[in-house]
Amino acid sequence: MSEASKHRLMLAIACILAAIYLFPLYWMYVTSLKSGSAMFATPPGLFPSDPQWSVYTYVWETRDMGRYMWNSLVIAAGSVALIIFLGTGCAYVLARYRNRWVDVGLFLILMLQVLPASLLITPIFVGFSQLGLLSTPRTAVIIAIAAKSMPFYVVLVRSTFMSVPMELEEAALVDGNSRIGAFFNIVLPLARNGILVSGILIFMQAFGEFVYSKSMIQNIELQPASVGLNSFMGPNTNEWNNILAYASMYVTPILAIFVLLQRRIVSGLTSGALK
Amino acid sequence: MPGEEQGSIASPGTVSARHPHGTPQKSPNMGATMKRIFSSMADGKGFDVALIVLPFAFLFVMAGLPLIYNVVMSFQEVDMFSLGTFARPFVGFKNYVTLFSQPETWPILKNTAIFVVASIAGQFIVGFSLALFFWTNFPGASWLRGLFLVSWVMPGLVVGAIWNWILSGDFGVLNYLLNALGIIDSNIFWRSDPNYSLWAVIIANIWLGTSFNMILLSVGLSAIPKDLFEAAELDGANAFQRFTTITLPMMRSTIGAIISLGLIFTLQQFDLFAAITSGGPNNSSNVTQYWAWDLSFRQYDFAQGATISVVMIVFVMIAAIVYVRSTRHEVRG
Image (cartoon, rainbow over all chains, first blue to last red; front, top):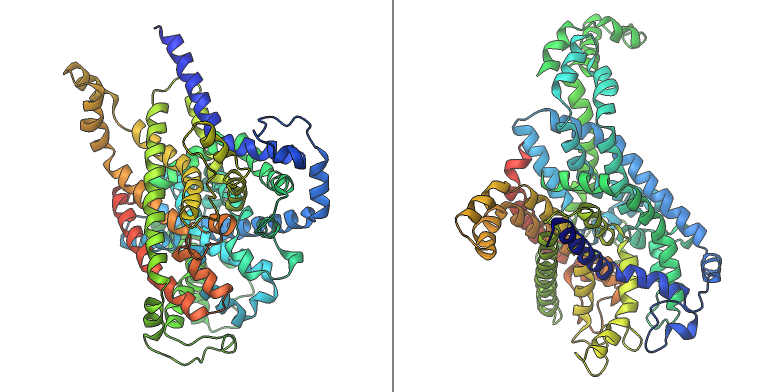
């Protein structure tokens, strides 16, 4: 078999594997377009014979999705802003020096990264309610997410800073820049891509966050889309087309960002998790 | 470090110009100290300290203190009335004794062990097979491989909703498929049958985590020098021998890191339980990380919730230490 046809065969198998793996995603979109009776048909149709496009506007309006999505956006944007503000400098310092203190700091950061949110929510909830933070629940969730996700961001961005050549910063200092000047004019612009990709990863995580929001936001007006989806899925529900239409609208923006920036996200992720 | 030497050379004039009103009313000695601190902030080691103090203070207050508070609460009696005060009666190890004398504790710990082992095994085996397949590097391989990662970036609740429908008893597509292939002859009620409910979540979790395993394993595979394989091939080693004598040993630290990361992520998995089974029926699919939340926020037993959290956090910390050790040479740079 020639090299080219071998490649073509491999590509075909790879496409089939990807199709099998991504089938649940396809099934979400297809089911959301099915009518009530088509959804429960046996055998289940692989394509919607009579796509019900109106389901999207129907679900968007009846479930007040605009409000849920807005809350998710506020929480995700707030967390990312707070994390970038606090975490970037931290990652820079941890990348710049190699001594015992940096080792200790890194170890603490990695330890905090692994704590499960569902286990930490009990003390956070009790502590926040004592501090009165729960009266502004979205802010409380933003702070909690920032504390949870910042270690991950620091690890990712640190590996970006490590790849910025130290000589460039030294040259800027010799040229009379202050440390602040060199940091903002030389180092940060060079690390911009890594910061952006890590910020996007954090954004996607925070956009789907559930435990903290479910536990701390009682007011339905302030709940994000993940909590809305959870309350939509009652134990004996049978409106799966509507639920999956909700899920589709919730997840499509994230999928769009991911597919557009896939290459960068994957390389940013792998450089941080193992290196 | 360049910054330290530079600190003394660079002009302090810019700094005092930036803070013209900060010093006059103070004593000259004090002013000099302030000036030195500001100049160090802009130009010396103080800059690094300033950058790192705030985030670490934030992490300490928002993640470190809750951790300590969690341990404190596990030794206290907490109810709805004492929730707002710090002065709660201490009860020693009573919460721990209560925890381990409850009939559901051991089954839930066993479920957690099954969930962790089965999820990691499934994710790793499927992920490694896919990584090996995509390693052959045909055109388009890296793009297609990256596409798998969508399962990992999706909100957990959405993954849960999709699998909730796929695993549905009467109309689920998985039951239909298994029926059509002749593997089962009556529908499995994945979510409501106590024998299968835990496996329903495991299946969804394997799907969710496989892609992450696969991507990291691909990175490890591509780091193995190609000439090792060429040499082995010349020596007459077949594909299986090359796999066991080169690939696996060379991947040891990657595999160690991925297994411990898998343990960490699996113990963090909460959303799928909330979306698919809610720990039911009758705790048959309950695991500790869901149970801790359920105790605190469904039964308002915050002390028990904190107690089980402490036990699990100790486990997670051990996994984290293994992870840090297996990536240590890289972490240190």
